[in-house]
Figure 1 (tube, rainbow, N blue to C red):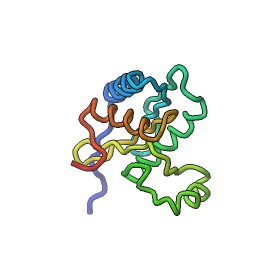
Figure 2 (tube, rainbow, N blue to C red):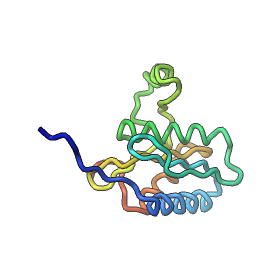
Figure 3 (tube, rainbow, N blue to C red):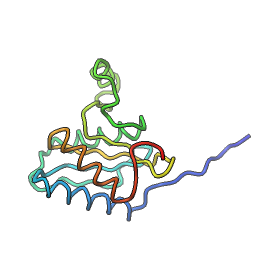
Length: 141
């Protein structure tokens, strides 16, 4: 009987590289963002609210990151029809808003990133830039 399983975790160095890349992408598009990175259990590893980003977007960015880490898929994978019901059932702990991406390193789900304050497309692009900084993907490789 197997009673333990080896796991991989994001290092603080990886988190800082992701934040730096995300900030760079947001600056390049001229859209200040709130960026939150969590581990696979939803614990915050790093976050920033860029100067000029909407302060309430920090909360949605955290929810996006936790949702993506929890489901192992982008937040937009949650079907539109069930989004209000899941939000209500989890006291707004789950969202289908765009901007939440899982972080896969190889086949391992190591966390999630949530970005908020821009349009959905901008939020996703900033998250993708962060993943690219550490050669992570949104699906198992």
